[in-house]
Length: 129
Image (cartoon, rainbow, N blue to C red; front, top):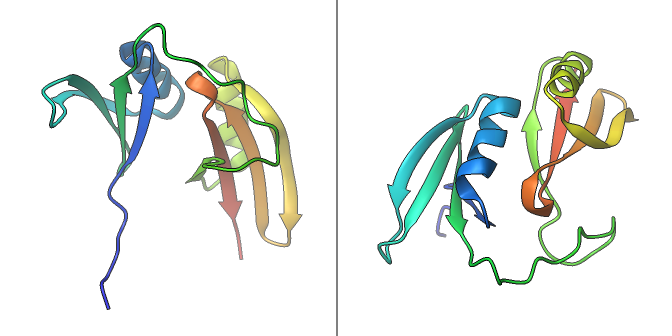
């Protein structure tokens, strides 16, 4: 059986540099310039080992509205933290917008959701016990 492992998340943005700066400010992402296989520039992020590519889309490309809670397709990606309340406080000081404030969804698991550029959502998770 083939073994699969995580490699990257690939985002599209009208402003890859601005989007990368947002992830740097919010999550401390390290930002790198790169080139895609088609020769086009790309911005790469390293969020503590999580690789994210950000490629440009033309200004005239359609920007779908932010999806409702129940929709098809990629819903979000998750970042684990040791102290959710502390992370939320830090992110709010940096100007982050939360679509879901911290809450316990089951014993030992607290979550919150943050709205990111280009209608991307990130779930913050604290797992204890």
